[in-house]
Length: 329
Image (cartoon, rainbow, N blue to C red):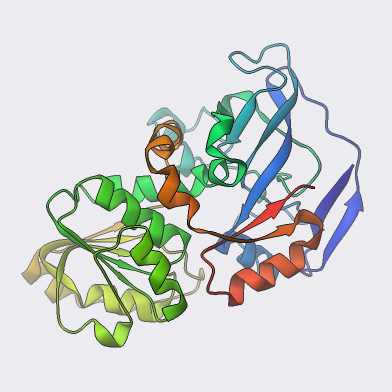
């Protein structure tokens, strides 16, 4: 079969590999849609923690089951599934605490093990979730980032009736804003320097959209930093209302450092919370997607053939589109 392969020197090739064979508790999926996100950009440009080069990327995907191991339950050949990419050990302290995304031996699909940018991919059966095919291939591939955004909103300790600021109008930021509206936020403001994304933010339900320069001195009860950029984080720290919450969901470079005034944290009783990956929110994201499929689908921009992976990554990094996806035709 054909597969995209990224080498440790970040060279991208399409290679031939043996077709995967499912073990007893595994399934083989033929992908039909796969999203590209910041993690893929890190893997292609300068590396990402846990990447096992050479690697076949692709962790936001949906597809059809073409084979299932004999011990797999609830999934059969022909089913349409979305896949949780976090493959955990099930035995460490974090797995036992119900936090598999923090597993000491985490090997995410498309990062630590082969991903979906291939004709077929093998995954643990327990990581696959049957989805109604009627929601559409691209929308189904958005369930993984939706689960990450849902974890971020849940980590905020509540958005209902609160004024919410979302910094970054990428996929994570806009899915977060959609969920905040769905969960009853009083007001959702989205900030992004790229004005090309502003109409999309309004279209999916943001009450206000602005550039950083237009934000002014307003402060918010809940702030989501979803850009993964140092100016965005500094902005977030300056716009938290007293007793407010900052949820850090954007992925920064490992070596990035930001100055924080501890007296302000003390005096204003601020809470700063990290939100890493999707926790255990994937099943909830499947259910939620049926309710928000229409606005979520508006985030999908251009699609590229999976075999043009390099061009797709470059477009994602430079485009005003929110979500770039791969197609398998």
